[in-house]
Length: 459
Image (cartoon, rainbow, N blue to C red; front, side):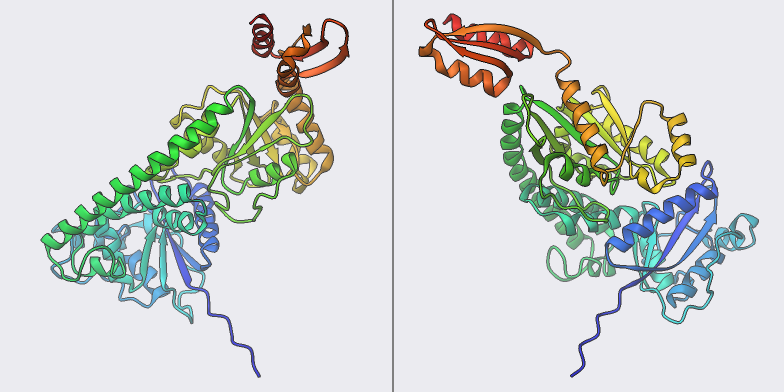
């Protein structure tokens, strides 16, 4: 008896345009990242098509010559059919014909000009208008996804909690709404989608209204969940909190696991973590520190996703300290640091103290480490896989949170035993003795905690 063969992975070809200010290295790095996104979705990338242009073509992103080259990968005609659904302006076809002879379009040809198995997907490293996506589909005969659509698909697949699923669905519908303007085949893109059968402007308007109503329902449900999350954050406001932030797949969840002893998901995939996990630093000492793992960032993260995940990212904004985890082994780590800084600025977390943790340095040679030390002299070069690095970072965290602690002696009457319990919970009891007048404590704690203990004794 033969075992059934696994279904073949969908084949995809990548499309990127080097606009002014983007060099070949930056374009290559961006396409490498798009390839990793594709791998996370289970796609096999079989080739790349690139072109250098002053701007994206308003009709089909690239010129006519490159469009034919792209179609070789997919088996399409390479020409946008002339018909009522064409959204190109008069004269665009002539512009594309001129592009075919332009020297700026000579770069980025596929390694295999006639692949045996054609690609069924075209992944575009830019945000497309609905008409650009439609024209590319008609010219290539393949499904076209822009960068935002790929990221949304990954978020939809990895969202586990109710809050994360609501946030992703809101972002997905916001992405879908303007694309409902495409009639006929546009409705097919939804796979039967929202609303009934038929085409025409009235049907599209009905669909858009249903989408708006659904978004309103989801936001109302999300708001109630955010209230509960806000209450939990308020309860933690007086505790020491540190948030792990950084680019997706930088190793935040790995650090969460080794710092807290928790069993959070650790996978070599982009956006493996979408919800927020909060655990105490382990082993717990006199100073309790809460560590939170947050959703990863990425270049060109759709604005709707940033807005939808704002409540999740509040964990970072309301923390006392940020651990900015960076994959030091990634050649594009400098650009990833900039992206993370930009997103932190968008959510109002740029003023929070931040430590840069250059992770995965066990993969680097000494020369590469020296370059990082020269570029980021204040960064910590560590690896979550080395126990000595974990212990060092944990000790640094405890020292940082204990830097402003004060010491005081208190005499607590036996009738106020709850004050003794609070001193143990919120501070470090260095010495505890019992006498006729009550319990004598020598407590090391923050100024606020000591003031609260004194106030409790004066009541």
